[in-house]
Length: 425
Ligand SMILES: *[C@@H]1O[C@H](CO)[C@@H](O)[C@H](O)[C@H]1NC(C)=O
Ligand SMILES: *[C@@H]1O[C@H](CO)[C@@H](O)[C@H](O)[C@H]1NC(C)=O
Ligand SMILES: *[C@@H]1O[C@H](CO)[C@@H](O)[C@H](O)[C@H]1NC(C)=O
Image (cartoon, rainbow, N blue to C red; front, side, top):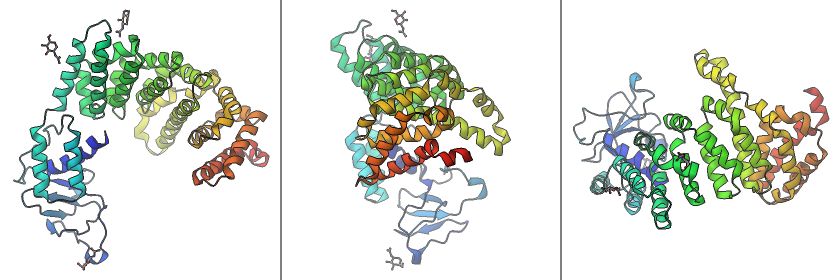
């Protein structure tokens, strides 16, 4: 995934020959580039101030820069149709089959700042191995349809491979949409998530789901329409496999984040109950419980920040209306969130002492749900004992991270147990 991201940036740079640099070059104060509204050649190694329009001639390797025109502001990439050196269009798919070694090689070359002629050659080598992502995805979906309907052990490995390739490809927004338009949700993912008895396949399918819905609003809508929300909730309520719960939580989060309609529908029905069920379950490890409280906290904060932002921007009325309908905090209340979290921390604090990351996640979540749970938590001696014990242990640690967490924890304890502060509120 990371390699693919890096390459896209690099390829987009080559293909468009023109991009806006952010100031990451080493700064040479004595040799700053003074930009004007005309193109000027940049010398090798010369620092480029932030926010300029930069273009690269791929034949000669010459870089030029100028100030952005007013009309260009805010666009990260500029097309250069009038610059003759380009033969690749921006629309051409910049994609690749799994050729990790070539990718790594080219990324390494970029990092070493080889000449642009050489980079260009690498890019050409790439093209020889090109099959568009779209073709590849359609082939994988097709391959999946060809598997027999009854589960065969002999096909398992192939299926897992196909899903792994899809997970890799579908992080890209356009690829995710190609997959969906070609029936991937219905023919590949839904049957596995809903009906397959093989846990590894379900885990892989949910990872694909998480990859394709992450930061992709169009895909989120399709995933929501296929009712994946309640299927994932079902898995959360019934699974005791830690990897499965983890991938279900991830997919669940990508479906819900920044999507108030889905939050409304999914969390008002089985969703909230499923999340709290994971917190209650004695079989679920703390790491996954910490993921649950993080998701809960993020969703609570998301609504709050939209409400706050709307004060300054009246345009946001439609979004605002959707969030106003969301009563996640009261659903949390109904399903006993405060008491459940109190029980988890009171009972498991000894194990938390070895897991500062989880403590940090719980601490952040307690802070964001403080207004909801304050009445219960501030009166709980067992919770108080647990939090103070962890805080004390961490505050005597040599480890900087634990010290930081102990400070955050002290702040939260202050919210609940500092009587003076309490009465001031
Ligand atoms: C900065 O620019 C000056 C003048 O061009 C040059 O002599 C010097 O080597 C440069 N320093 C760095 C660190 O690039
Ligand atoms: C799927 O099966 C059809 C018919 O048997 C075959 O023509 C096609 O090549 C297969 N596709 C893949 C991707 O295996
Ligand atoms: C799951 O299995 C049931 C019973 O065989 C079937 O009716 C249903 O269509 C299947 N669902 C999916 C999404 O494949």
